[in-house]
Amino acid sequence: VVSLPTRIQSYLDQWILFKIWLNSFSQTSEVEYTSLKRLLGQYHQQGIFSDEEKLYYEVWFQLIDGNYDEAINKMQWLVGTKYHDFVVAIQSAIDQYNSLKDVPEYYKDGLIAYQLQNQWFLAGAKKVAIRLVNEHSDYILPYQILANVDFLTQSRDSASRYFHQLLELDPQEKSSYLYYLGICYYHLQDFSNAVLYLAQISDQDIMIDSDRYLILSYIALWENTRVFWGWQRLLGYNTITPADYYSFFEEAFWKPYRRGETSTYLEKNGKLVQD
Image 1 (cartoon, rainbow, N blue to C red):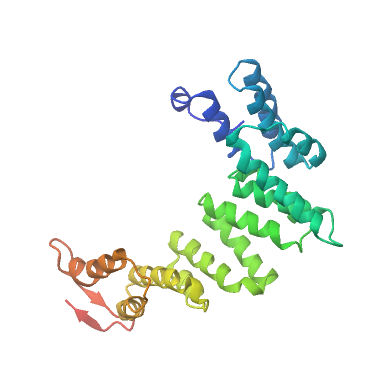
Image 2 (cartoon, rainbow, N blue to C red):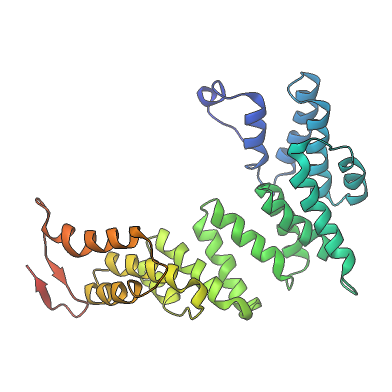
């Protein structure tokens, strides 16, 4: 099981530690995965988990292992209110698969993994998705799951690789993948690539957020003419927030004149704007 510093473990309840391990085990390590299963039984014997809590996590493991009949059988005994959303989500994935015609069995694995992701069982969703990608390289959904999980867990470099693959596999969602690629590169401080991908977006539904990241990338690149062009466009949207105004005035007026810092601004072509 993934190790945590002893000092940190001493402050946390055992059930919290278990949840941390549940979302941080290595998806390629059967040793860690098996240790989690064994730990569940130990915690139940020690009274840390109730019978229903133990059943809940057993369902989780059965879903990851693809033992759906057993998982469904156990789910019917999860009657506590806190399990309602989980049960409904998993049942919806199974119902969705059953409603499809002439689709391979492994599509069900993808739908289950997607719902595990939505229920924030990220490591489990990723474990299933990795298996699917290795066995069925043309199946789009597991790539989306891997990209989303790595994005959510701030593994930006890995997420960007999956989004690049998705650009080739799923061109219909091009704008969405370009957007997330731009954000990944922005957080990796590769601002030139951030601009490269964000500037290609044409989907109006995500344009405003894309423009925000474009402006931040241009600021980092000291491309000030493009920064103010970006602000002009952003301030023309009807759905901007007060934070957009605050950011604009901070960049346009406060930062250039605050004490103790240079107020030298250069355009992309090197022309001196202010000194």
